[in-house]
Length: 163
Image (cartoon, rainbow, N blue to C red; front, side, top):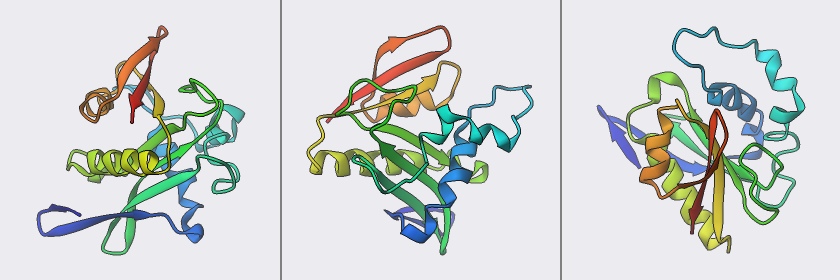
């Protein structure tokens, strides 16, 4: 449990009836650099983004934890073995994480990441991966929980955490 100004945030597994929320959190996960206009929500219809949420819960490596504040889901971290930007091999789950803006910077993201890494380790996974834009402030958080850069391109780091 994470607390902040008398508010408690419980990190728990997502319920099937909440899978629909992943579309909102996927949109929230899109990094928008300062001064750039956010994309239309229709960007989520692109195949390279749909891979994160289509038929979630039906494939190997599909795990999701949410941050619940007084009965409302305010953040999510989920993994899936998929051919996404952070794909390193067919045995390594890739991470996605996001929080609604007003809940960022309170330590909730770190707690969600740590608990997801523990869950994956208990499930027998050897490592996890993700891709993150180099300018994204979340790079620091990923390093703090044990992710290391294993590759990069012009815009992104590909990071892996050994479990």
